[in-house]
Length: 110
Image (cartoon, rainbow, N blue to C red; front, top):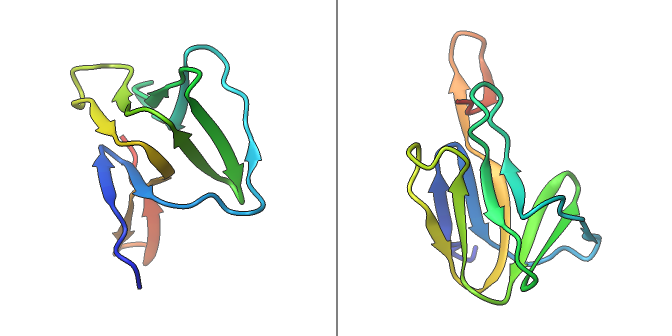
């Protein structure tokens, strides 16, 4: 198993990855792409979307290819520090936690 770069940004988890063959380009509305929704507070985790950044989706997962270092940040800047993602291909997901009471794996929520 290869070691993957893993970056945690609140409940958003980012992996260095490769683009799946079935990935399709996604459009970005506005100047950024939401890569992890904030279900309660509206403090979405976003990546700015200049021309040198492309987003894709495959099997419900968002991927990004960036030709320049790109930052992941929150809309409420005081909640999490910006993190710079080096040039490459990245996969975005949500951290999971185990609920022992209900005996299930659930997504971390803010």
